[in-house]
Each structure stands twice: as structure tokens, then as C-alpha cells.
Image (cartoon, rainbow, N blue to C red):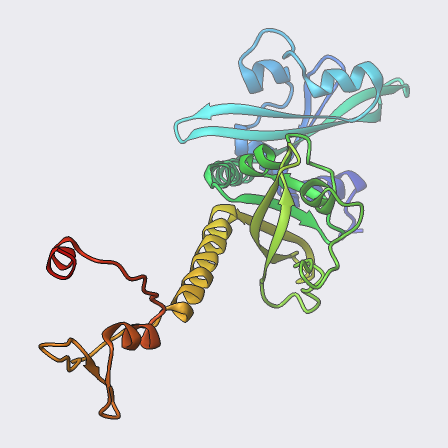
Length: 321
């Protein structure tokens, strides 16, 4: 038939359509086949030894995945880094065993090697790792205690400030155990759990709590919790940030105590203000009703002052010579 195409041609056509570089090597590491992508990548080297053609070596490469396939008959994977004029190139190599028929009809083992350019993916992973490290460095440099929690209050990650406050081994603990020394989540009206209060998970929650440090000492903290959504848009984790406000609470308490004391003192103080009409001879003071009063009587009535009588040296000489 004119339209007949052999099975081998169909297989080659299929392999040529694949975007990965594919080669087949016999047990002597001689190249039996390369698909179009493989030839476009490194050239046509059919019939040559792979280590010579691909790597310019005189012997099999150390850690060669195809060699490991010939050894145990199982698939193997490795990632190689090559340097080009455009920078490093990362190649993922997956080798698998293959059974072929030789001219005598006997089965011989060959290795199928699939190579995939991983440069862009590795570069993205490196950039992502660098960004993660940078963010972690920033988080570790923040003085506030930062925890990453699951929905059931388990600590997944903590910055240095949190570890310094609650202990170095808080990862994997429940936050109420690490910060409150409690066996159950917070549920009091005075100290509601910010996670429990975020039923809708739409907005962050702010509360004030009494925590305990690693030594069991009490500290006052301002806690804020923020929901984190996964790719499906579901909330599965929380950022828990607490700021030590112990000094602020102490200052507020001292200020309130001082204000209270001042209020009591002011309530007991009665002052004389304004212009007081006083007699220039007898020193009596005229009140608002027009009556003249002894100066000590007037002052005692309008202030908290009390009088005790005595004689000054001049009056003693004058009246009791």
C-alpha cells in the first residue's frame, strides 16, 4: 500500500514531535538513536560513544544514569550543570531500561535517556529561594514575635524574636502551649483567641493578651493575626504577630494611679481667689453678704487651713512688756 508507514517510522515520527531530547544507547554506551530535538540540541552523533560525543570524555561519566540503569535495571535521574557563553545551563536526565532484539534474535538491554532543559525552572527556583531567604532574614530582624500557624494552632515557623521569647523548640508546638502555658486554646472574654474570632477570615484581628516567656515571667502583648490563603483561595494558615507592650501597660497603670491621686487631692483642696476686701486697721475681711469677719474665721471657712494662736516677738514686747 502506498500509504503504508512502518511501525518504526511511526515511532520515530512520534519521538521527533516530543519537546525533550531523547537518545538510545547500547550497553557499550554507543548512540543508537537521537530524536530531532536531541540532534538540534547537540548535533547528530549516531554511532558514537555518548561520553565522547556529549561530554568530550574518554570514559563513562561518573554518576551516569544510563550506567546505573545497566547495573540494576531501574530508572535513574540526575541533574547536570553545564556552562555556556550565556551562563550555566541545567539539564535533567532521566534514564530508563529498554529491551531490543539483536541480529541473532536475542534480547539486549539498551538505555533510553531523556534530557530536559531545566535552566529557566532552576533559575526561578533559585530566585524563589533567594526571595524566601531574604524575607526570612527580614522577619528574623523584626523585634516583634512572628509565628506561622495552622488552623488548629500548631506552630509551623517562628522568627528569632519568637524563639528568644518562648524558647528555641517551639516549632511543632501549639501556640497556646508555647505562649500561654495552657493546655487549651484561649476562650475567655478578657483574652479571646484572635484565630477563633476570625470565623469569616476576611480581616485581621487585634487583641491584647497576657503571655509567659521562657522563664515563666508574665508579659503583656498586643496580638494581631492575619489569614493566608492557598491557591484554591481557602484559608489554611495564619500569621500571628505579638508585640511586647509590658512597659506601655506599666506606664499606663502608673499614669492612671497618678491621675487618681491628683483627683483625690484636688477634691480636698479649697482655694481663695479674687480680690479680698480687708480692713486696714483691724484686718477683718468683708464677705459676699457685707459682713466683716475675723481673718482667721474667714480663711478657716473657705479653706482647709486651721489656726493655732500665739504671739510674735514684737507683740509680746508691746502688750506684755
